[in-house]
Length: 415
Image (cartoon, rainbow, N blue to C red):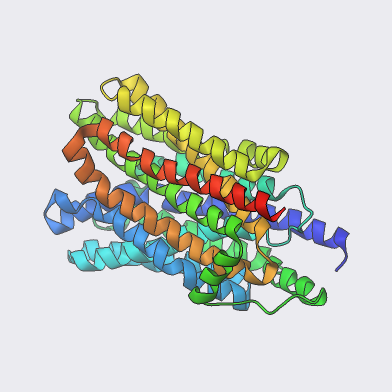
């Protein structure tokens, strides 16, 4: 396959992944919020409401490495379709759990729904499988696939009403109707990946690498860590993705509770979270272009500066609705800048034979960091209020800034 054919396949791959991400967003956009309501209902305690996000995030972390290995051995279309299949079974189990009133089955279902999230994260790396070392569009292509999530993430929560209507017509348990949309959307996404990714971009990239005398891909957690030790810039990218996600999840997950305690209604809270989601995804193409134009590490640092502004605005303005909303919007922007540029940096830094292995580890680290951030944020909020939570979030931001300085220093010493 010559360079022209590779470029054509690359553009088609980005279009296919974009379509699949839109469908995946529709499928998962409303299920976590409904999942928290179901968790509280089936468990009989509102204390379990947060288990929806926790088990879904842990599921995404757990499935990331197996899906990466599946991609490495059989290609992206198989891996992405498998992630969608996990989400389909998860949605079926949610409906079953509600029908029989069995809370542990709901937790298993949410864990399996995390497979859809893991596939969505992997799709952004699939967008750059065919990018060569000299390509200047790595950030743009990756950001385009990230941006596609915006559509489903924004429209998805509005499917709760229609989903409930369809569920009642079919005699399903209360609050499970929207999961029918999850099943249909994930099945459609799986079909898009399966039939659209032909030839498979990762398999083509591996063949091209083999033709150039590249090494056989490495697949294990041990080799992934060894690779990161050999490539400090890639290690910086993985740490930046994980810690940036921790900051976002920790503050975002507690904002609805904080606003509720201030007396704001659900409309105001929903508007704030919608703006936050828009900040996360809608501007990703801009940050992708900036990372290609001005350097990926610089845009990672820009993301941290945006985080500083976000945490200061939301923290010191904790009693002001406008400032909290602005802070959450900036928090989404900081996540977008950091995640898009760090992911592009990771894809750009690693040799072809080591990419999928490290990418799986990166996605697992990202989700585990998010789960940890969400788990400790409630205790921090209860102890030192919303201002203290935002102040605590400066710690991972500072670690990223310090690590970036170490990487730059090592790079200068080598040169």
